Amino acid sequence: MRKIGYLRVSTQEQRPDRQIDALQSRCDALRIETVSATSRRRPVYDATLAELMLGDTLVVLDLDRAFRSVIDAVSTAERLLARGIGFEIANLQVDTATPSGMLVYTVMSAFAEFERRMLIQRTKEGLAAARRRGKRLGRPPKLTPAQLATARDALADESETITSLARQFAVAPWTLSRALRQRQGQHT
Image (cartoon, rainbow, N blue to C red; front, side, top):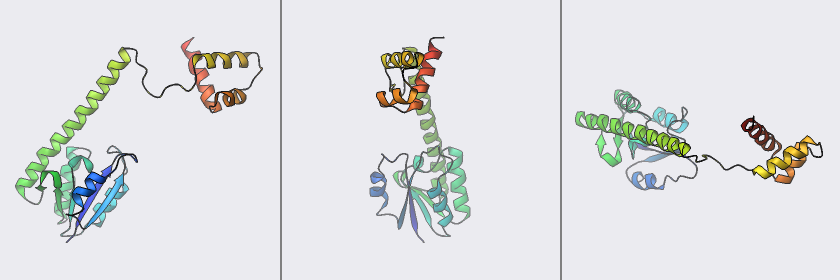
């Protein structure tokens, strides 16, 4: 009977240290994955579920580290219980092997999904508000309007090539081509 901890962070820049510190003393082994919660493929998660045997327990620190939705969370817990595998959420001190633990787990899963959906909604609303105010979102352009005008003129009189201009501006040729096309689309 082992306790296997599953830890997930979304990006390489994020560190699993908080999860490691919380789970290391209560688990026999930790499985760490770096993948977005919305990713369809989670190989470490899938391998961890496959490795669990009768009597083992899957441990996660928080619900959102393992599950995408309430349905995902509840169905996974039920599948694990059917295989004789326990499931614990460390921060909630919830053990789904008991009826009361499963109830708390189901309710908390619903709240976690609600929180995630509200965050997505607020983010979309914030981006829309910024766009309405004329804020440019995303990465700043690599080329200035003056550089694009210079490139357009040089290409028109055939004194330069896309490649030579791109080299002068320290960008890739396709970056210059795309910027010129976008600029032309704005002025037509």
